[in-house]
Length: 118
Image 1 (cartoon, one colour):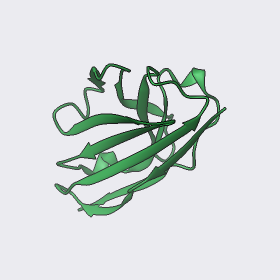
Image 2 (tube, rainbow, N blue to C red):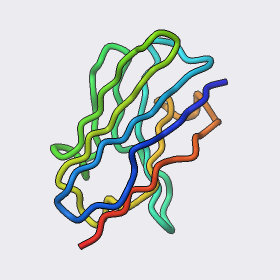
Image 3 (cartoon, rainbow, N blue to C red):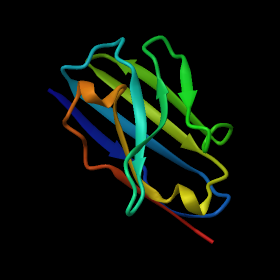
Image 4 (cartoon, helix red, strand yellow):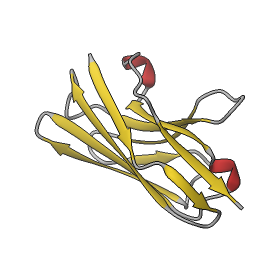
């Protein structure tokens, strides 16, 4: 199993920045792709960005140019980060990290709440 712990959420005004961190441990491999996902109230969970085992990145159109995903393979863990700049009201959601694709690991973490206000 993979254990996931997200941190770094919070409340910020529109235009502000936040940085999310995710610690993945357990049955995780250095070359696993890792992704950030989010779920807004009343909406389905969606993929925000992912980073491959060799550092290639991909972003949802809604966040491209504002968010940056990165990773650090630290020993038996994978740290994944999401730098979020120029935040918008519609970025308000609970953010989760997981493998990409997420079907590889059904055990989601608790998520990190991000609230953007005007």
